[in-house]
Amino acid sequence: MNTVVSGIRPTGQLHLGNYFGALRNFVKLQHEARCFFFIADYHALTTHDNPEQLHENVRTVLAEYIAAGMDPQTATIYVQSDVPQVTELSLLLSMHAYVGELERTASFKDKVRKNPSNVNAGLLTYPVLMAADILLHRASHVPVGKDQEQHLELTRVFARRFNNMYGVEYFPESQPYNFGSELVKIPGLDGSGKMGKSENNGIFLADSDAVIRKKVMKAVTDAGPAEPNSPMSEGVANIFTIMNVVSEPSTIEYFKEKHAACEIRYGDLKKQLAEDIIKTVAPIRERIESIRNDDAYLRDVLAEGASRARESASKTVEDVRQIMGIRRF
Image: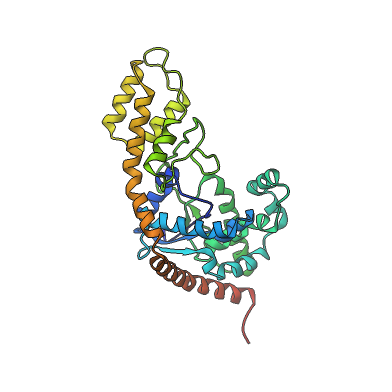
């Protein structure tokens, strides 16, 4: 594994699912590979985000990245729009991307179905820009979720097509990376599915203690086990899944025994879960608040990250221009 590229759209705050599902692994990965982590503000424009909110979201995500353990001195952390080479590479790659294959992507069809009044060209060419994000640094691996696997497959198609058309072996066929193990999937508090921003069922890293307690106490459970050793309902099982990543093993075992014996009090279970989440989140939240308000530090981080990213990107774009015949006289 040589180079890893990963990005996140600045659509709001990061939650426990982001933290345990990917962020902690990114922190480890930054010491094992050449890593580029970027905040995809161009991608966010496909949904016509409020300009002021978009800017603040970038600030928030950057602070949360760093507070969660990403080291700007070790990994390259940058904002997508600070590296203009990505738009040129996206344009060049689009010359070999076919409309039909873009229209067939599951994400495009889903967006068209959900927002028929906002079917913009950016949505259609989203996979091309994503491919440019990855190929800009000639990444060997990309950490992706299930919803992005088709886009990564298209990235490999674009890379292979470019190499074949010009008779070169320039772009690698980037492989998905899952950190060597089954990823942790943090469920939401509504009794089903995964934790997410759009589902409004998450605990965010910046949530206050009071907000965390309020959210957890509203978590879906059931009427209680009908008889000893009854299977857990989905809502109760979800609570224990979250406990598995924030609570002590002895605490988890205690409540499992209470459930098996039909003696469990869900109010006590939720109170314990809330306190264990607070113990995990509070130190991160304090770092987020400190970092988020330090404009000078954030500017320095992004200036350094953009400089390193542009150095890598400039070499790639210059090579691609030469290969495609765009050369200076």
